[in-house]
Image (cartoon, protein in one colour):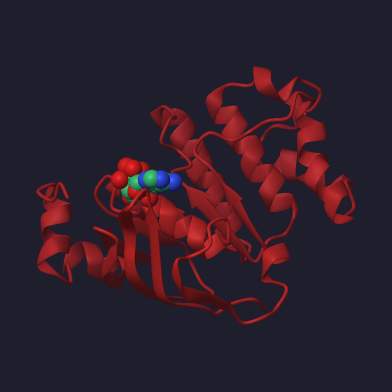
Length: 229
Ligand SMILES: Nc1ncnc2c1ncn2[C@@H]1O[C@H](COP(=O)(O)OP(=O)(O)OP(=O)(O)O)[C@@H](O)[C@H]1O
């Protein structure tokens, strides 16, 4: 088990601007953690720091086991597809990791893409590409899956399909940690909510508490749509 993960004193600056300004956070096994907050708050940068894509300027991300890098995956708002078939895209990371590539087809079936396995991946719709990106990550059997605004460029129908897949991934025991600007989505998916404002964690709560009894004045303002920064 690579969880719990503890982040301590995380700071990150770019271009002379301090984007993450001292974040302490613990991630435990369980249902999805939704990272929400105003535009530019630092949600995406925080996810990249936790995943290890960015190195913090200060602070540390500590996982319970040493081989954490291999047991966590990340999916982005606009996934990058190889110029190959849907199936080849799903198989590629498995082959690199020495995992049975047969898992790729099983994952495509779980996201409803088995019938499109032979299609060029780049010809898929945005929603289908996002389902493929989730299948590709899911096939790896990650213990933790980071999702950065996975439905931000999708229409409502594709969004619901992707949410159903995320819920299924979480139900099978993968810890999902995702950013979203969509509070409806956070209500539908979250077990826990982390509110980030101006590079700091303003509130962490179980989801029902966050929505029904906002723990801070900023959380209440954010839920009303009054918090722009
Ligand atoms: N590599 C970088 N260099 C300079 N500035 C950056 C870099 N990455 C992010 N930023 C800036 O840091 C701030 C936080 O960015 P981030 O993408 O984490 O915000 P966010 O909370 O995910 O916002 P949104 O909801 O708009 O996606 C933004 O002002 C962004 O422009």
